[in-house]
Image (cartoon, rainbow, N blue to C red; front, side, top):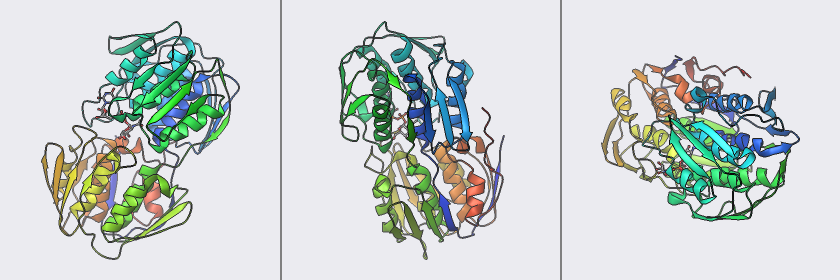
Length: 424
Ligand code: UD1
């Protein structure tokens, strides 16, 4: 079990490059197995543990997967031979549900463990399953696995409940090789959905409307290999900016698309930070204690739920009282217990946290229980006086590649969190 040791109260200063988006990577690496012909080459892939686990799963399905370098992945799926994903690996990942959509479309059957991922609420997969059924698949939940079968998927008109990101991804993947047209109403509009659509279209797919809430997928008989660059990770990028704000430092994040996180930049400006941007970089400078702001998480383009825990860490040291409402997931506040251990004042009532800022956080032994909640503890540790010893680092490493290295590059006094080696 990995640990990160943080000596706090050191202002972050310098430049860090954003890695490729984890969530785009999960969708696009899975969609790569739709190609029956040719090789997919993906650039800007973040080799965090989630995407490495996914590579292992698709390789066990018979795809030829190899890393050309630290961030470039080559996948040839002409050789796909199995429809059963290794149980122990698939259950670790939330994104493994996408393999059901991809296998159904490509080989007409799938047997994939009920997914894992962060424990931030009940996280059912009922919308995905109803979507597959609407495309004509028989789906059963048996022995901890989703088992699905369809001799041929048929396009359908589907209302995506709660504008679910995962359901939109899955039905775009499955619909791409279906007979006829699939229409998604109330589709998710996240940048990762647009990235997936661009990838599918480059492979020969016909997806229109991605980025709006109405997506139209015309099924095609087959898809082929292509080269594609994955978009930058907007959540990781914003987390380092929040690191600048919480330590009253100056952080430049490069390799980003600022339009993908406009709402977050506005909120950070409201805390009193100065923001400067170019086409592909953002610099945050914070010379004073942040001022409290209220947050309500929303699907894109609203304030992203994945940045709610890092923002609560920032509010924990801010001047004033902040109300943070979580509207996307039903149990995302577990990390606040450990924040309290560090001296934060956070009162949670159902979906809302009331955070009373203090300038006196102190380092403590704490434990990450999920990816973004764990990152909130890292940020709090950077702002706290003394040493924070964070256990459960593996949760955080699922999404933050080379966390320790990147923080050290910004001048933080941290030990641990070296970049994970590539295993496949
Ligand atoms: C994705 C992201 C995650 C992000 C979230 C919201 C990936 C791998 N993960 O998660 O980082 O926080 O979008 O932006 O891309 N729901 C159901 N039944 C379902 C599916 C979802 O009830 O079948 C509920 C969820 O519990 C949640 C809401 O719908 O309350 C939205 O979830 P969804 O957008 O699907 O999130 P994920 O795709 O799991």
